[in-house]
Length: 384
Image (tube, rainbow, N blue to C red):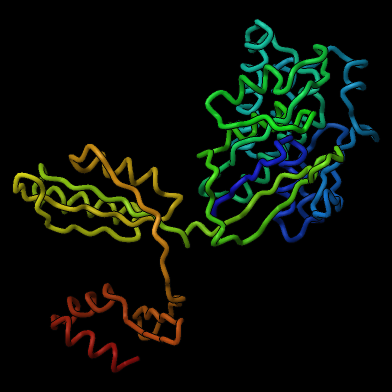
């Protein structure tokens, strides 16, 4: 399973968390589970929300019976330090991985804030970002992503808005300096909407988790869509959408021509591809320029495994370049059953039904009985 975050109206921590909650069928149970993680004095609630006619969710965080606001935070304390935030996180009833993820996100924010204000990350005091609702948004996001366990996360270019934003340091331009620092190397753009659309929390969460930023997602295999609504009512629907897609349904084809590798070496490379989960790997003899004999080495893999197999091809072959294709494909629905100790694969679709005994089971019987492969298959076919 993959996730794609569509950030046409920016990204904020509460919107991201709200969209992820929307991917769960039993929202009541998941909110109850989140309320047991031990955020001090904090209660989480999810409610329906509508933005521009689009229904989604909004996650509300109340602390000691009331919602925290930037104004409340400015009047009550000077902001939490990195050490104080780490102490809160380490005291929560969450896995060590989630704790590490939350701390990793805050470290991104600390470096960005420190750079913006000429301080080291350890000297940074978190004002709005040190409020318990911000800690809750980040922790909820990390917790839910661990439960969803996506194989790959892709994020669209991020709309940061325009104009100015009021914060503890005064009136700042949009995007705020900390957001600009976080989004270094990330595709983002300003729009005609005169408000801050991408907060430091939202930017840091996406920067931390994104495997790729892309404006060209594939929506052919969407399983679910989560919609997170922001608190501001704007001229456009103030939402972030997260699409859960079927990773296995989309494939990537990687290929390269190799003229300086032996038959044994390229066969070993193919074995490595299959052992690491390639959908298929095949080798063809080709003739290259100047009459050089070579191999066309091709790997078919799930889209989410593309980077892994690029690395494996470079590791196990002598190629210095790989071509990438993303073909469409038609597949039959496959089901497995077992009979007389043999695994039988049944494929169905497009008016066709086929049934086949798995090769390894035929091979095992042939070796066990010291008979030919053909005789072993005949026996199993008769038994079934």
